[in-house]
Image (spheres, rainbow, N blue to C red):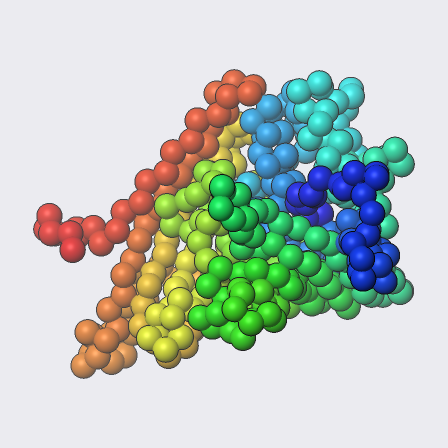
Length: 379
């Protein structure tokens, strides 16, 4: 994906190089020019789109606009269960009858971002083609090797000083696809908040390090009916654009195993996640979710999540097929003397999003934590 860039104001044309710094000016200008011209890597159609990718916001806008914003024959992806994969944005070309004015900008941005891929949802438009990747090679048998780089960042300014915000620096995205396998890494050489507490900085006394918040290996089944991913990243479950009550894109990145199952005939999507919250404390997280679109303007979601103590992910939690309220009972049945250690914390979530009219959407979310069925006691 193309990183968001904030470029500094260019120097005046009459500016001259400082004495003694001439040899550094041209190489530095060349590096900055290459970084600005580089585009975000889309490693392959199998790549996961980050939950905060700008294209997600464009898709949300098209969903709110409804049939005015997209061909009603084409279902938008599961926008309440993120991340998406790029191959999910595919169909029969662009919307029939032209693009409405309200959706024209979103369509143009999506076409530009997906213009390299022949199977994109929107037909590639030569006038909106993306700039070339820094490096891209393909070979028979769905083999791809791609690399992109760019500069991205933001700063906080006040009367006394300027401070770069976290995530500012040089970004590189590397993707390797071998048939249905994908190896992807997004690397940052830049500022990370509180980096000195867990890493040696590139420059002493700063928070500049080499870091990653999105690196994984994934496999996608034939025709994209299911996919699995193991690595580090973020997930967002719920109808909210910024945050969610159970699993939100505003949380810290997690290291976990996830898989998704798509049942387009019933407009149904299932997602399962197993992640580690605190390795040394043995804090594990298990979550599964069903998102259903019974009607084109209506999306319903049901989520169950459990936090439990274990040295690693437990099979009954990781498989995702058992209700977590039953998993604890099964484990206690096997080890009756360890009921205290096997106790979990289960949360339930319900959410709904309804487009009441083109351009207007209502959504809500409800979470129940530690609700007792027999008493009113809620710890």
